[in-house]
Image (cartoon, rainbow, N blue to C red; front, side, top):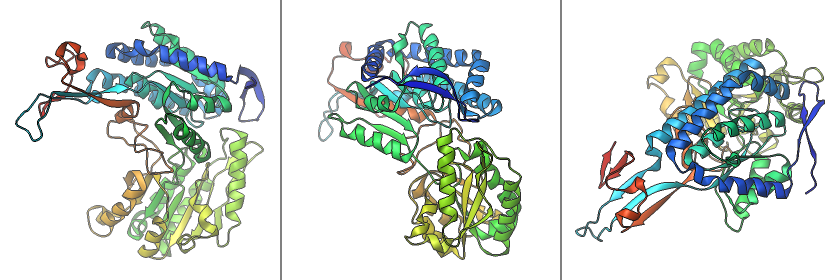
Length: 509
């Protein structure tokens, strides 16, 4: 693999700023993975891991001004948005530190022998152990929260797994800066810097997922790129888990009663959600089922006014901008597609938000309008106007898996009168998070959060946000009839680590 320069690019102009690094060769990928593999032992102690995670958060906060400036130069996401994202990232690191300290994620279960059972039960002790080196593929649209210091990295380290991150080409300089910050935090606890590996380049990403010492991978990106890596992970001589977030339409259903009750508020809320971050959020509502009739017309009018008042913005890179403009053109040329606010190119380097309308009937059967059921990354949504509930249900039945699905109900429907429960039942098979009377943009870092969904939203049933994201990087192992002196401390009867566990069928906290 020939080395190639990696440049920092200004998304506002498309011009190269400076050479940041070179694309990693196969040998350099191998060295990064082997260094990470060698660092596993330094993460064995839970107290060290949690302290490392907290130090990482502290170090990131200490370098906040420099990091935000570097991130804005490469992404044009703006200091306010990036400062908030960095704060979220630090909170996430500390939240995983708390999870490590608590220890419940180990799922300790101990069964003493029971000769009276049929069949007899031997001495069995089960808990979870780290998988090994995790490959992390950074996202373009979240240079902190889903990149080098993001949820995949934080949860993997919390599980006891070193990481090798494949930097995203949209923010290579920031990736280098953040990796250096994390390594400084590791050094505070005598953890080798190889615990955080970083490589650049497309081919390096392919080499990484194929490396025999890589035990799992986490990915956030496109369907095309994610599926290629997923297939490579499955085709290895020893296949590995690949937890990929690929693409999502995030459908929204607005009932006729809800539109009649608050059409203007729904239209304004939809405009804010679909244009947030210039439409570059993975949970942007991309398809909205809205009723025909006077209430639906009011909603579209409100949406038109709000979107028309939204400024053009810069996408993360010019490739994305070109894809957005081309996608808009292709969609607007379909029969019976109208553009109350025409999306597309703004200035030479920006895009203007907008939305399309189409009769929902055009989406109820396979045809050329199926393009409207595919994600278009950027500030665009499709409003499908349905005549009746049967038509809306027919469209929902054709949708692929999603990260989110949303319904807006009237006050009475939300109280249990009407089709509210039926619509929730229709949406549940489609998504990992189902919202009522809200908007999907904004993914809280919370223990009950689930950020995932049926394919192509994700390639697994796991979440990449929230405490249970740690489960992706662990595997269970059970010891049978092992002498107490040989058992890991986590599985001993006297519980020297004070772990929550299930002991002979009884939950101990």
